[in-house]
Image 1: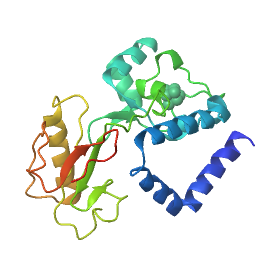
Image 2 (image 1 turned 180 degrees about the horizontal axis):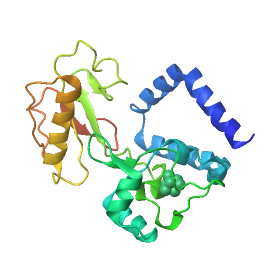
Image 3 (image 1 turned 90 degrees about the vertical axis):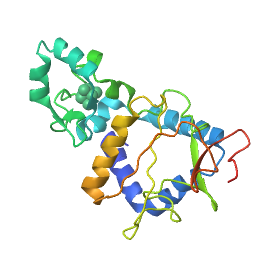
Length: 231
Ligand code: SF4
């Protein structure tokens, strides 16, 4: 089967089995995290053993990487352009101010499927699809739970706690893996987005560095070797 057929087949299967995929992804949240890590790693290796990225190039054709300042400096120097010219020529900000390509397919993708700036390509491209660099490590990630037990993302994939059209109050949690640094900027952005897209009012924000189950009705725990900590 050639790459285009494989891609078309994947897309058709994803659409055909959307409910089954949804239930499967939701069920992962309740499984043993190490087993999920191992399965994800095995499936990643299996998938990439049959994918020839140069034949496929679907990512470079359909998704823009994010360009951080280090990428821009490195690539502009490689192309003998100023950083300002590079930005004006190729990039535009999204609503959060992050820089992405003005259009896809990527202008640095050659007809033969190779990246013409491969040695200096953006970090986002070098690490894409971000799941093959080792353990995914869902172990140790926070678990959200209330009196009825753990739940998944409240935006779409957990029916009991999902945000619906008639939802009047929400709690948004931003998880930082590098401590509190930069959280003020993240909170400001989140508040701006909630105001802009959800007409939010009465926004309260704060940084929680220590978990105290007595303080919150809906609290944050951590997975442990033995599984989820009970509420
Ligand atoms: S910079 Fe290279 S690897 Fe990244 S999207 Fe463009 S062509 Fe693909």
